[in-house]
Image 1 (spheres, rainbow, N blue to C red):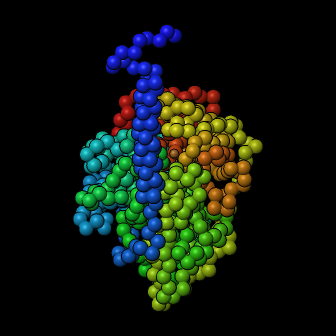
Image 2 (cartoon, protein in one colour):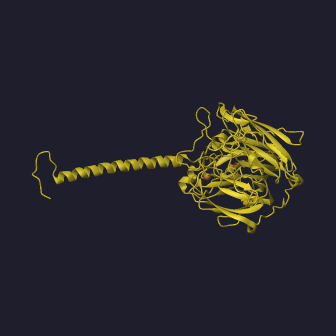
Image 3 (cartoon, protein in one colour):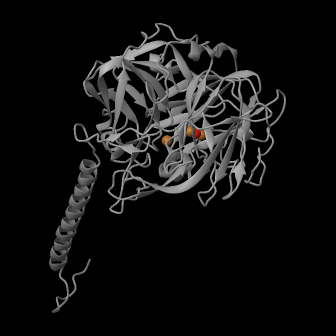
Length: 521
Ligand code: C2O
Ligand code: CU
């Protein structure tokens, strides 16, 4: 390189070097500042994401009990219910009314109740002003009665599914299931319980007086803005969906329950969009879990914690002493994720749920039976097919939900094994329509007693595989699919859902009716 004569205003290599140095120092300062800002933002996000309401909830309102839905028997012997989906507003403790949706009321819906063997007919009329559906979660029924995304109900229309109840006594529930907006429709308040009874459940001496010693708990979390309106979105960086800071039980904020009997049975439903609850009592008392998603366990399971992911149910029986009080609480949960994901998904939260207040004199309850029901074991060796499902991002096996695509074809009358793996960094909860399954193993181990009965939804932590066995014994229909999906509703809405059909042996899958509007079963 030849050196040019030094002229005024021209750069010497030395000047160039020092200019470069200044530039480097300056941009390093900017980078440091940006990193500090980002760290501060992350730190603030992390710290502000924790909710702890232990001991801070006043419990000033009596727990609302969803009314039992009235029904009549029609000339064909069917038990008929009428459900109207409507807009409304409710007192959710914000000092002003909160705009809500509800079913035959302002928020949530009545409890439907039917016996095994009964034919039911439900007239579902949509007055919410936009299309929606109503799905019977946990119910074994024909796909066209299922209320999934293919059974849209247009505004003003009535959809009237009918089926025969043919499964063990259980605590089921219902909620909208349209593709892409399930999260919002459930969040606004469309959900309710569907209780099934059978000969065994009626014979057993379990607490069974609805609303007295047999109490539904529809547990949801919500957040509100300054106008008292419900917030709908997920918080910054959280991928599991909406997680709120206020617990609402049966539509009551800060609820207490007056207990009048020695034993009280709580039917707990996690009807939240994304929150995973780790239930226990504030005095760490033990309680007896007697039922899981699909029905009674073989025997009561004594425990002091109950983990429920969205969509899951459990029935527990709690013993109370005269005059005492205890608070059902949700404790921090091991979500199996890294610390940031866990924190943002609510895994570090402690939430007071409902206070139980025992009367000074309690009515005697019969002792809890030592044995409940026989749960016949499904045999994985008999599986006609084994399917593998990988959950990751918003996809199952690398594909997003497509209303036109039927991914799996199941032969009527067969048993199958489904291996479901969470290949993601966040928890997912896997739900299958039509059937109740049994968990062969999960995360390489036998299921705990709480997961050993009939299930339709299962929590999978990152890296975990569950082997599920299920029998497809009824209702072949090559054109009408059932769903399987993540029950974190935002994940489901963004595509973590697939479809299967049940066909007569030898048949092939057809195609879902292309018109998405199927107003009549
Ligand atoms: Cu609770 Cu496919 O839903
Ligand atoms: Cu998910």
